[in-house]
Length: 310
Ligand code: AMP
Image (tube, rainbow, N blue to C red; front, side, top):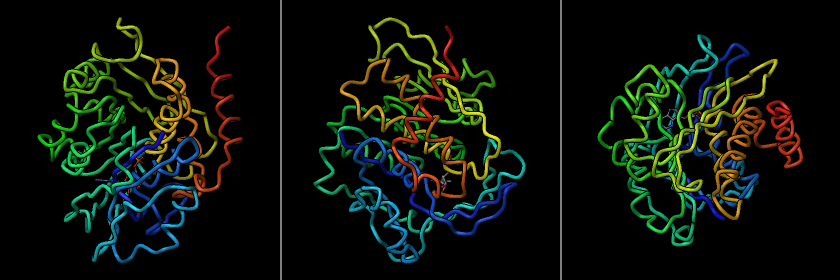
């Protein structure tokens, strides 16, 4: 089943305890697409500037990602500058240059319209909404956002939240959005804003899913929260894109299954953790470009072993 994703395709300048990189290929939609490409067909909607090269686009196409929906505009590509020197679990944004994203009107190619799964990756919520409105027949919609949009674009974000099946955000964002320092209380508040389920990512501590009353997963009864692990790693080279890679593994697995059941949802959380753990092993998208499905499945088995209770 195909996934359509809208989000940033960008250049990232990153500083971590392991070193520094200037203008490497990044962006939420880039990480998401690469991770999901190991599970299913992915189509991207984004905009890049004149500084985006054919070689950079080939990073996506060589993984089979359909990039016909990436518009090439005059001007510079989105550029994000971030640091993990203070906290490896949470990026400190130093600069956000939207550039060509400031004047972007998403156009969905006719060939993309039959996509059954839609992922609204981290980008201006008004762009997420424009794409959501054009994709009326999708089976499942997941979305992401971040502090930048929660604090400054709350009204637009509220409209996006109403149309989501699942929201995936990190725990700092969940507490900010839910307006409560307690995660469970924040989750309940968020579920009352529209999403039928919520996946909260805790960086190196795994992820937790919360399900609302309207969740179509399960048999109609209340579903208890579900916690999935993260892999303890000796070295984290670059946490950038871990959240988007989690989302790619999560949604990629769901889209590859015959039905979105509670079992598939829980497995998807594990695959999310697997893809996040690979992403942080090297700078930028390096590790995600060179994986094999066998490596992914091997790590999935490790995740199962790690959390199995006899
Ligand atoms: P994460 O998976 O949360 O680490 O996301 C990292 C990616 O998000 C980076 O590659 C950035 O290019 C991208 N990013 C950062 N800020 C924004 C923003 N305001 N809008 C869209 N994408 C962003």
